[in-house]
Length: 299
Ligand SMILES: NC(=O)c1ccc[n+]([C@@H]2O[C@H](COP(=O)([O-])OP(=O)(O)OC[C@H]3O[C@@H](n4cnc5c(N)ncnc54)[C@H](OP(=O)(O)O)[C@@H]3O)[C@@H](O)[C@H]2O)c1
Image 1 (cartoon, helix red, strand yellow):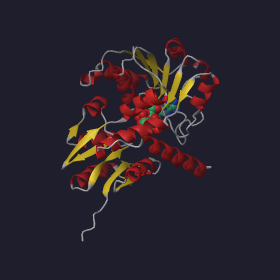
Image 2 (cartoon, helix red, strand yellow):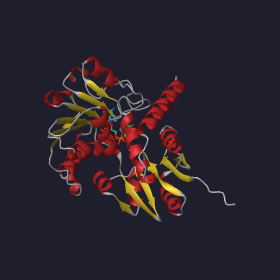
Image 3 (cartoon, rainbow, N blue to C red):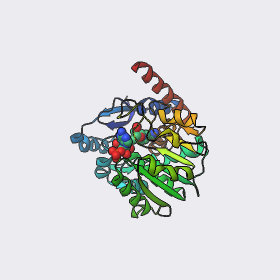
Image 4 (cartoon, helix red, strand yellow):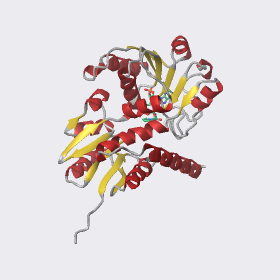
C-alpha cells in the first residue's frame, strides 16, 4: 500500500512569524476536505530561488509570498499573469507542472473588500490614497481599473508618490488602466485639505497605526481633515481598529478594516491552487480569531 503525502502550500517571508495565513488557509483546506498542508516558511533572501526550485520538483500547489520577497518572486517565476505584470510584484505562485506562474491577488482582494464589505462603487468617484509602497501599487491599479475619476496619491517621500502616479497614469504600459486623472501630493495637511474635501474614499496604505510599526499610536493625516463624506479604508489590520479608523468613526465617516482584504487576497490564491470556490466566510472567521489570539498573547 502506498501512503499519499498531503499536497503542500504555504507562505514565504523573512521574518514570517507574524503571518496568520497558515491559520485561515488551513481552515479552508480542512473545510473542503482537501488533503493539503499550508505552513509558514522563514526563507532568507539568498534562499528564495532554491525554495522555488523545490516547488518545481512536485508535491506543491503553490505558495503565497510576503515581505521582502515579492519582487524577487517576480524574477524567479516562469510566467507572470497580466495583474502581476501591472502591479510589478508577485504575492501568489501557482505550480503548473514544472512551471511556476506568478500572480498578484492584492488588487482583487482590495476591490472585493471595498465593494462587498464597504458597499462602495468606485466608478466615477474621487479617491485619496495615502502611501506609495508595495500595497499602494495594488490599490492604485485596482482603483484605476475600477474607473475612479480622480486619484490623489499622497506620500511622505513625495518622489515615490510621483513615481506611483506615473505608473498608474500610464497603466504601467501593460495593464491599460490609464484613464484616471492621477496626481501626486506630499503627505501634509496643507496639500491634502482641498482634495480630501472632494474625495469620497480615503485609503491608508502606509504602515502608520500598525502594531509594531513605525508609528503605532498615530494617524497618517491630521484627524480634523476627516469628515462624514468619506469612507475610510485602512489596510493595516493589526490592530483591527487603528487610530485612523477610530478618528474616522469620531468624525462620522464610514470605516472599513484591513482584514477582509488580507483574507480575500488569500481566497483568490486558494481558488487558483485548487480550482474550487474558497470558503471566504470560514477563512475570515478564522483570521479574526487568530488575530484576536495574537493580540491577547501580546498583552
Ligand atoms: N490588508 C491587507 O491585505 C494588506 C496588504 C498589504 C499591506 N498591508 C499593510 O499595509 C501597510 C503597508 O505595507 P507595504 O507593504 O506597502 O509597506 P511598504 O512598502 O514598506 O510601504 C510603507 C509605506 O508607509 C509609509 N510610512 C512608513 N512610516 C511612515 C511614517 N512614520 N509616516 C508616514 N508614512 C510612513 C512609507 O512612506 P515612505 O515612502 O515615505 O517611506 C510607505 O508609503 C502595512 O501595515 C501592511 O501590513 C495590508
